[in-house]
Length: 179
Image (cartoon, rainbow, N blue to C red; front, side):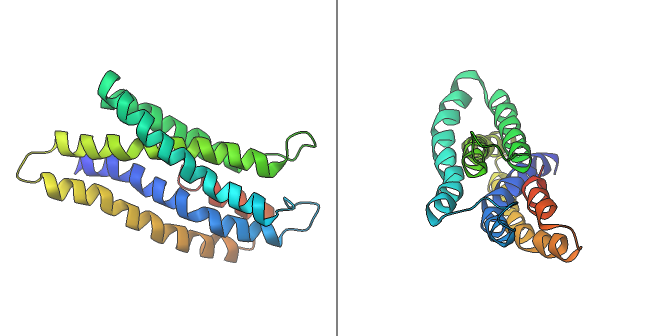
């Protein structure tokens, strides 16, 4: 149960972080121009796909890292990247020299790089650390936490947005919830 909880919590956060961005972008579109990002369809697309691009590269990179330096060290690195990327996404600030949309692209890429690394490492660790007679169930239980994260990405915004918070605070809370 401990292994499922440890690895599954990462998959929960990963799925939440991957699925929350569309809702956050919709919230950002509702902000007044002085608070909003001034998003174009192109910048919306870049923000949305930067996490996926990071995830693909993170899978390849951390698959190799896990084999070379160990899965535990790799999981610690990926978890740190997910934490940093998620927190940094929620803390971006408006500047003239580095627009918020580009900051979100960068922080979401870092988040995605960590998410991508967690996939192969968690799958391998779940398989290696469980006994052969329950291995399939352990791996399935770990991966099933993605579904819970997806559901949370639909329910958490309902709670946050109905709480009467400002939209400026709401989108930031939504981005850092899974931390």
